Image (tube, rainbow, N blue to C red; front, side, top):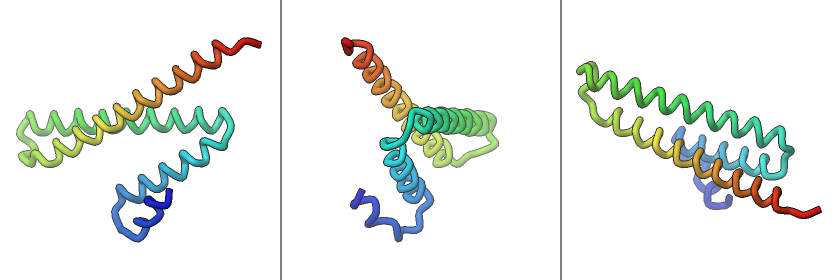
Length: 105
């Protein structure tokens, strides 16, 4: 967390969002199931929004309404990163669930 705290003075929205996400993750790690669940719902909603934004950019580009490929590429990368993150979190949750189910009482 020290490496992220060192760049707080940079005025980039992406970096601020990363810092906020890191702080939320730290809060979730010490929180209850309810906070973890609401964090996952928010993550899924953000991923869905990024996928929808990508689809909009693709349609604009295909119809010739946008000739700037940069917007399309940025939307693709954001959607891809968000989806990969969501899948990784899902896999970790499933692994944790399997481990809990294997605990003998």
